Length: 640
Image (tube, rainbow, N blue to C red; front, side, top):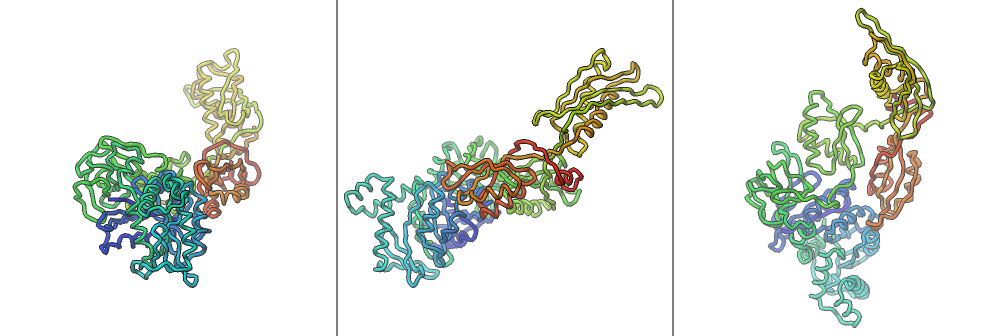
């Protein structure tokens, strides 16, 4: 069985394409819907195939590597519109990183919004692989009514819902066909010396040799052939499948591409299903994957065919099935019989860029939510799970709003837990602006042994990033040595929450003097004196609010990079600069410093400014002082 992933922007017609591919042989396919993917198992010319229809949308595009982990080839479905080529940029980036053979299908040519060659040129801006037209359109009255195959030099007329019919080459297309064919052969000759010699010597290359060169160059991912059609009407789909049948490699090539010689299977998707638990979709890379057999060091409980029932005994190399009762298996992993081979970096999703605190709507669901989140995170490698240090609630980091909706739906449908999702509050801190010396006496008498401790302290600001420092210069035993650690503990206690209501950082406390009582002094008394003394001193030392600032790395198509300067400025950030991404043609890496409070706004602004194609990675950089009305609003709790 050969396995292809059909991917592309939303509204490019992927589902229409897969539907017609799966029905070419006249038999109903076996279909399995699983969240963001749909799997169709079918036959074409008596050969078994499986097509993965990857949902559209930029957030899904950033997780495309996981599907390519199991794919022999990809079909990139795009619209015939040069202005929309940038929407395919994340997919071309993922395909190139994976080294996966790819065929481009320019869909919906019955309603083009530009010249086909302009669409190909616009797509070329986002990949270092050569995009070459293998067909050119036949136009009548401004409409595309068929296509000319540039290798066979045969012309085909589209028919509604039927296979195309062979026609004589239209005279009006002869010159354009020769020009396009010469361009195709020139690109192909760049990777084949024999073809280059034929062209130099003005020899007509043999048609069979050209098909073989095309097969090799597609499988080696040096050329991305482009085909035309309109899947809704069934046009061009048969030609696409014939090209895939000839040029898509077998599963052995995938195992070589993954450098996983001992691997038996790869997990490429997972989903929690009611009454079944975690279900992991596997593709066998070699013999030995069987129900009750060992994979990844433990037993596979059961295997289910796509769209079928459980009880599938074993998988032949290349076959696809759903593993149940095998909780040790996960998506995005390569498995041997006894262990796991780490997936290559390109198979991992982009770093999650949106954070949400999730809490149950009903207190009774607190324990159930924790268990449900663990199961959802285990099945979704694009999701990360942490804990908010302020509230103790779970924090989800996600790819974006669509990803959030999918996770909330999974929690509700799969586990019956309703949750509320809110952005986490920035990790504000505070410090002081001046040095203050003060003293504090703790005295308490309630019958029996009392409490007594007297401390003189100096509280002073430190350089940013130094944290907390405690020193002492006590002379003459005014504070006995055994009580000084307790004063330090009390001072640290006071920095947990400062006058403005936030943890205090970058402060030095010096114990300069004090008094003690031979009977009533104790560790507890000196800790209390240290805490209260520092607390009072902090209030007198000019408390200042600090906001966290993050370093932001934005991965963005170059065409949108110019708009980032004004966008970052509007969010009160600081532009650090940008460079071309050396690994990805047509992409820039834009760097900036941004207040953590603006990160959620950045997600929305990036989505709007770049049509969802860009994403960012954030890491804490430093704290900076915040003044004025905004600081007052935060300190009084209105902005927290």
